[in-house]
Length: 586
Image (cartoon, rainbow, N blue to C red; front, side, top):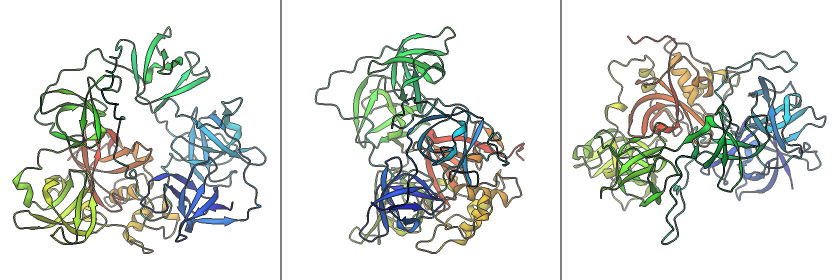
């Protein structure tokens, strides 16, 4: 098989030979891959990475190399960082550019090592791949196994500390999120997923689920958590559990900080109590409130449970389209307490419930203009105000469009999408965002008029680039790269440029991570504040907060469907809300 080297700074590995396929991960400059085949048009290559992940990448950013050229020596295994901060580089040496840094006790998977053994190519839990000095990596596998390292027990994000590598370098930068390749249409938000089916459909007449022993059962709240041989991080890991798993308590350490638990597969060991949520004895009673609105089930089947967690028994299965009333979410926004039309109540995962807002049947909604959101799983966009005209595209749940024209008494609405496509649709399942999507006369934060002024700036199709988007990127640390394509992730660059226009200090970074610590954090969001997100798949995003409806917030930002646009995002993905340091409301 032929091999190739990645020539772009970062390149998407996708599930198929087109930008419409979901991103499986990122490849980095100079990373070597194996060529398995090509798409019929020759524009995409089917490749296999060093860690055996298979997918498709743009042929434009792959350089085919001689078959006889040596590959890095494969050395699989799990490693732990032993210093406060350690650079992650593009290649095996201090002359290679830093792409981020690792922190003490962070766990990584070794993919290969340099011929002299002084550098290891490693993969982080967020998928970032790079090279780090072997000197500061501790092998956790006496007999290495080729299995991916689970995520470590999460710790608070540290302030960057100088790397102890013996080289004169500046203090390590805050870790940037992976910068995308200059490939068409990357987005900071996750790629669309197939219809979710959170839990498998039961067999006919399933046996009743056993009631959980709420006194001695815990739900895992970390992304991944080690199960160890003893009560402490010095004990070897036996296995790991994932977020949402349920374990049974067997005992605890003297200080109560570690719990001895038994997994569903009968393995027993010790877990840090910090990341175990004790399941309550009885779920709270249903307390209907008028301001929580209605929600519609978006999954094919969704469990209605006795309490907020998969450890609670399922009492019913709700089918797609079922409308429920909610009395509010759990603190982490991952579960909603709901009531059905027949009066039955329980708890459902918020991931598969969409807020209707109670407006879909409002007659006034039929003739409204401005920004609207889709409240059903699909709305077809036609080339004209007739279903017999050509189908242009379709909208998905929570996608937003700008209504330009209304025919008659709201029979049809002419809309423009974030990507600039103009067409017509039945407005029955379009709900106006109202004043939240309009610039207010007295905005608290001075950058809001700047942001709204650029509403509609979008990436250009084909080889052309939008100079305005390039201007956003030039205001950040990407300024050293001339003429970056407008497909480069630019959500943070837009925020940076927008705030910079008002003379307020910014991070200067084109990546999201620094914005998570910029200025001061506020617990209650205010219109116009910076809001940061972390997606379930590991990606990040930053924008300006506008308002909310149910379990979603509204935000104006860059690279939102490849444009400066207004979009809806789940509250559960919000990391924090931030304002300039020392900001005093006028």
